Length: 440
Image (tube, rainbow, N blue to C red; front, side, top):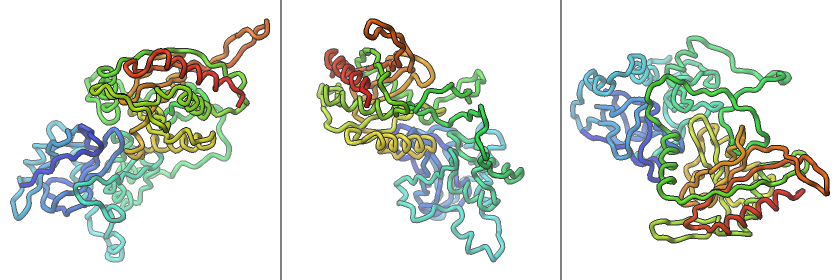
């Protein structure tokens, strides 16, 4: 018997969640064929088969969280006789409903049904990853996005066989993953893809899949999709990682927050809020570089960084994501907008490259997209600071002996007091406010 343990699917990620098995107990498998889709905080990836043989046991079901280094699957090799399919299935299924067992066991059987001879050549590659897969000790991100939903290779192959348009399928899997049962349900009840209306429907406000931290304008919150059932549920995926990050931050950082307002009444109509915030942050880094830095609490050492890579906090139904906008000191307003649009698309499609979610040098968030004036935002180590923008408002201010209503944006700056002094933080915030007050 050969037991394959879950490899590290990222840089030090402690675990991953099973999204969908592409093999079942009793299957004869070959090296590098798709084996299982796993979800981490960063992406949904396919783990390929590491060794040829017969699947003897699966150490988990869809929805289970597997620790890195823990057994994932067991193979019978070199003529060994695997445990009976029924016994293994009983070991792995536990209290799982029969419907889920059938899905896991039938998906590849459905794909291997006999097809007409005329289609034999076309169906040779159904269920495989297009192109050559990497060696089996690596991970292949083969989930494809369909309008915010994701489908693994075996599910895409099943949809192709059943002639189902995946854009019309309702995804019931974790994180918007389309399951085999979803494809079968769509095949049984086909519907046409949604078409664009000739003109926008007045008062129509579809709920966004993601809530970007820095929208061009503030909006009313969408109805929650959270299901309340009064039951304890294991925290999984990106929300699990978010919990670990916040816990680590609380344990290792000495945070202090200062707050103030920026008068943006001089802005031109249609000004890009994101671009102005990024520009003011870069200006503030030039004025006070100590906040664009990393700090090592164990060695009590600090690294001031010459480039400005901003971690943009983005809120989603699955938890908080922090993609990185690189080299912001060299971006103009258009460059910032293009980078922000890319971030939004990647977060919505869960297609963010792992390298794009690390090594930011300073953080930016907008907790006030729906409500809130000031806050105490949380820093992610090794960064030493995070700036957050609250809800825009109008406020009466004295002007030349009179009173005027000016547009105001509240700012909250949290900094690690081990690495940054109060004076440095105050000068940084003052530089941001000064730049934000400019017309252009």
